[in-house]
Figure 1 (cartoon, rainbow, N blue to C red):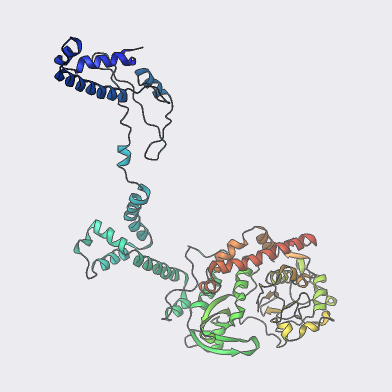
Figure 2: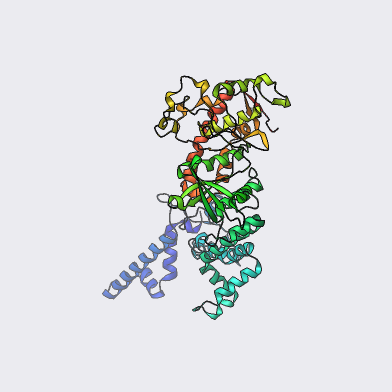
Length: 536
């Protein structure tokens, strides 16, 4: 035990060192107890009590969990983990220093009160929320616009901004320019997006279509928005050109088409006549807003790899008080159709089932005359059945709604065709259309789908007699990427996207198609149908 560990000796030592000589003489020698000596002694006692209390505070004893401070205890503390919690909220332990030796070899008491709180408190309270965003704004803003704008255009915008009235002349400096760009961020964002749209149209609109769109003063940006370097792979260049023409070109003239309950519109054609313009692909059919599902059908057809429907986009039309309406490309190559069935080939349900059994033109085999085959290839029926089932298009193969319970709004109920299901073999198929130059393949027209059909009320009559399905379409349904592709494809059509309530509304439509695709895959497995490549 050292000298500092004995409290009595410590007290005597302090008395001898701190009291003046006269007081010591009074303390040690015998003097008469006068009133003066009594006052001096009382003062000394009070002074000594104060000193003892201070010594006890500096050198605490081990009472109630406190330890005596010594050189050995300090060394032990440096080797044990720190159990206290710092005041600044961090959990990092303070660094204990080794005991220092004086010049005479004695141990100097370590400074245990200097815990590094002052240096931590000198830092900002929230560095990430204050300093770094300012640095990112100053450096990132000029770079982002420089990446999208040519150098000359970017410098011209800076010049125009510096020349605005009311701005200080020091805006030409480096720091002033950075601050000016920050304050005008939203304005430059608008210029940047407009520049992207203008460059996109310049890259993707060659020839006459670009000129026709430029002649339309009321449209600055295309309603077909493609912000990436290339369009989706399932859409051809011809599809993109037709979509831009239908969505952006100025309407020259209109003509009513009573048989289709639609309006034929002729876009910018120059000095050519209406017939010539339509033969050149500059015409379209504007349908009712209720037929908006035809736009969805077009994108689904391309994603599944069928490529049988006509390009269709959404466009706000003055014929329906500015509402969004589907506009379908007028294809002059389609074969003439019958006014009753709107088909280029007359077929009944019974004869159609016979054709499915004969597998006309499959594997390049020429059918026999007694089979009664048409020019249509056998695989076309499989593609049409799959497409119609996903969208529940019943007007081609189930005109009388015999395979499900229709609603009052359905055409079969309004025309009273539901009552004529007793002799289904005699029911005519409708909207079976070919092209003049290509009689082997079908063209899907009037593709109005229905998304309000419940899973327990689907029309499975559409799939009756189908034993093979196209591999390209089935692989997309199995890949779990149908939703992703539909979102990418439908986003191109700005008017359609907005008319359906944005992504939230589009997702609801895709949910319906995904549920039906699962049911279709289950049907294929349950009936042992074959999945074949149909790219003849």
